[in-house]
Length: 237
Image 1 (cartoon, rainbow, N blue to C red):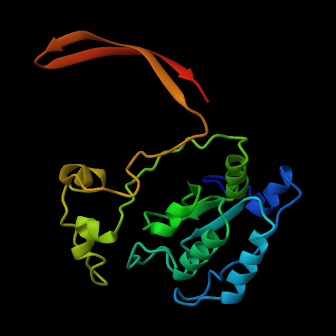
Image 2 (image 1 turned 90 degrees about the vertical axis):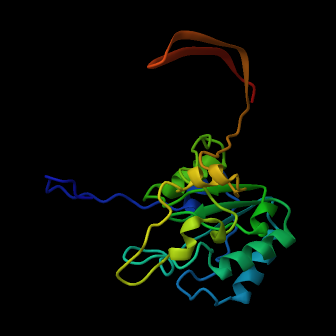
């Protein structure tokens, strides 16, 4: 890493989830499942069969899927919101053979999550993880840290639900943004359209209860309104 205004260069090890799990357990099995460098429609059934065979020995399956470089990078737009077919086939096959599946997503933006994802017991959205992403994901999976992030965007059920679909991705030189203010949650709230996961959605390991909610109006003028809200918050998880 080379910081701005500095000639000092240092190297930091890139972590991965497989190695990071050794901190919590010495019983980890691994199967590749797919080849991220292949075209979208290439399915390696032998890799899928290997993954299925390992699930028979596993208490929990953690499945890492997402958008590889071949479908997502700088300099071009994705033609759809779909995940690679090989990832979807792998997930569906695993869910048919195991009842405890956790999906970890790695993607730079919104993706469609078909019905097979809803068969998983949990979905952890990692977005684009940095060099310490492997450690971070494992800390969340094993409960060293609680997943407290919230979605910064809306995940629609289908790309056809988005008003920009008719004009996107456009041509090589021109992309037209005709949706105006109807972007993201503002559009879905306005037309009252169902989504897969709304803007701001996120779960955590614990539960909370609110008590003694009080609202006090401090100022109620036509040009200024102020209220003070207070409550007792209890962590019940």
